[in-house]
Image 1 (tube, rainbow, N blue to C red):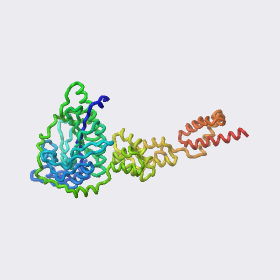
Image 2: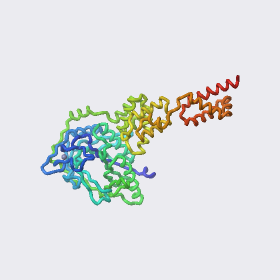
Image 3: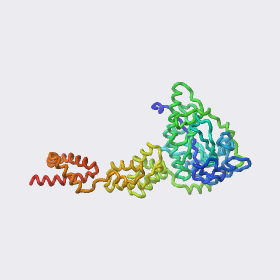
Image 4: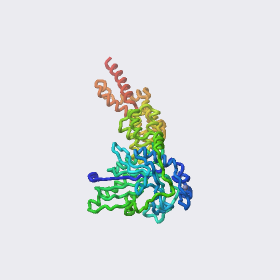
Length: 484
Ligand SMILES: [Zn+2]
C-alpha cells in the first residue's frame, strides 16, 4: 500500500441520490415510500411502462433538483430535455430508463459546479434527473445465485445523478466528497442518506493515465473507500507485472471485499439515447431559480462559518461538526441546553467520533440524545464525577442509552462529598502509617504518600482538592500538638 502514493490516481464518481422526501414517484402518482413494503404493490401502468400510458413530471422533484444544482454551484439549463436510455434489464419494465443526456442535442438539468472538500474543489460535470429502476434480489450473492427476484416498487422513484470530473486523488477524498454531498442534500431536506440504498455510487478509477475501470453498485458510501483501495492494489499489481489494465466494468462484492469483472465496459452509443417523445421540454425560468434560491436553507459551508462566529469554534472543529448534518444538529441541540459550546464540541469530536468511526455508524443511529451529553457535563461541573469517570460513563451511555445519573448511581461512581466520612478514613490511614505522618509534618512533599493512600482507599472517588485540605488540616493539628 505504501507505494500507491507515488502513482498518479484519478477517481471520478457517479452518484445516484433518491429524492426521499417526495411523496410520489417521478412520473406517476405511485407512493415513493417503498421500503419494507410488499413487493410489486406500489406500481401502476405508467411506472410499469404499459402501452398507451403517458408520464407526467413531478414538479416538486424538479424544484428539489434545482436546489441541488444551486447548492453545487452548477449552471442550470434554461430548457432541459428528457432522453430515453435504451437497454434491456429485468428490473426495467419499459426496456428504457427516462433519463437525461448531455450529447446529441440532449440538455441535462445542470452543467458544471463544484463541491469543496478541505479547501479543494472537486468539479461537477453534470447533474440530471432520472428514474430509478426496480430492484433485483439475489439468493446470496449476484455470482452464486441461480435466480433473481424482481420488485418494481422502486421503479420510477425520482433520482438525481451527479457526475464528477476525475478530480479525486485518493479513496479518502472520494469518501469525504460523498459525505459532504450527503451533508448538503440533508441540509436541503430533500434526501435522507441513512435510508438503505438512498445513495448509491459508481466509481471510476485510472492509475498512471491507464484505462478507466468502473466499479458498479457500491451500495453505501462506507464501502466506496474500501472498493477503491482494493481496486488500486489490484491495478498496481497488474502494472507492476507489465500487464495492461483493460477498460471494464467491475462489481464490488461487499461480502468478500473484492471487485469482480462483470463485462467489458459498454460504450455510450450502445444505449441508443434519443429524446423522450412523451415528455415536453422543461423550461426553467430565471424567476423560478431566483425564487428557489431565496427559499434555500442554510448549507454546510455557511453553517460552518456561523459555528466559528457564534460558538467561537476553531475552523477545524466547525468543519468536522458540519461534515454531517446529524452531528451539526446534535451539537446545536446540546449548545441550547448547555452554555459551554467548546466543551460540547470537544466531547463530540473526540470521544463520540472515535466511537462512531469504530462502528461505522452516524450519530443519529445512537440511542443517545443531546440531553445525555449535557447531563453528563453538568455532573462534571457539579463535582459529582471526574472527567476520567465521565469517559467511562459516556461509554456506558453509548452502549445502553441510560441517563448519566442512573449510570453513576448504579455503578457507585459518585465522588465522595462527605467530609466527615473522609476525615474518618484519613484518621485510619494516619494510624496505619505513623512514619509517613512524621515525615509529612517536617517535609511537605511527603504528603503525597498519604494522599496516594487516601485515593487508594476511596478508589479515586474523592476530589483531590478536598483530600489535600483534610490531610493538611489533620497534619497541622498534629504538628501543633507535637510542638506544644
Ligand atoms: Zn406508478
